[in-house]
Image 1 (cartoon, rainbow, N blue to C red):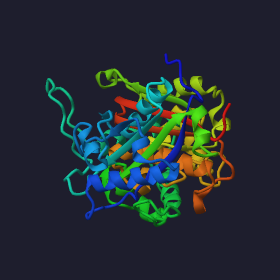
Image 2 (cartoon, rainbow, N blue to C red; image 1 turned 30 degrees about the vertical axis):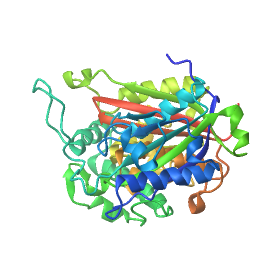
Image 3 (cartoon, rainbow, N blue to C red; image 1 turned 45 degrees about the horizontal axis):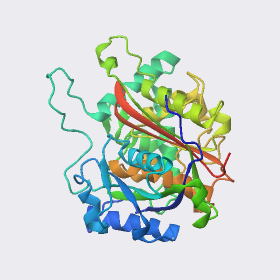
Length: 393
């Protein structure tokens, strides 16, 4: 159990590239763009940074991936990887380093250049194993959630598909308002529902895409933040839960919940003093890699009662105008998923919303936000949660 670092560190600057098919830019270009936007936003110089944490899944090795393009001058640069939580992991480590007093100012940055790498998101090379790991694509793995949920809570396939379609529709609607999203068009419900099948009942429009992108955050101790800006973002909780993987060994594994989500949320809420997440959290960015993933996340994170999330979806609870807006920036569905950058992109949306700079998707005075990443499969994954706030205390 973590002691937590509630309100000990603050984010004083952030930057984010547009997530897109950047055929004309390298990973170096994206890192420089995101980092220098963050430097300018914070009003600091690159030489003010004491240490860096870089998150990338497959777009570079070691700290040299960052020290080269940024020309950092012999300061520590640590490259981290934790599947789809990679960018969030860079942020978590940078926050802990500053909170410990080891450094006064740290840069957390994530990048991924996937579109010209051949990476499709469907097949991922497995590390050496004993050959008993089932060869399965990500869409197929997450498709198991849908029929399990429908069966457990009495939804016929048509009603279930309507719920999943509504989730994708919401996220694309939000993303249409975001100039940094890869896909910036609303998509009609009928087009989503009838999109070509990938892994039944998931069509293409139930799946997030790939993209290139980078995002960055500059972190200082809370007492130092007023030297840089009057409206920093405060860190309330940071958790990672890595699962033991016993789900794949059980015939009775329940595909209507992801245990790592539940454990990460429980610990994050303890750190931040959240007792009623649906009422106390004003907005959330969650890992909508596939539509049924977002559906079970609502219940795993306590936004909905067990078996009730599908009704909340259809009632618009998680819409931009709803009781608890989820993925106000458009989520993975609108941004795609440059793995090392996604977690920091989610935090960037929290940062903009707290400062009232989210444009047409701006929420009315949000004060507490949650971000969530999930990397792996439903039966074994890493799950990350941050809780961030506009105010101290």
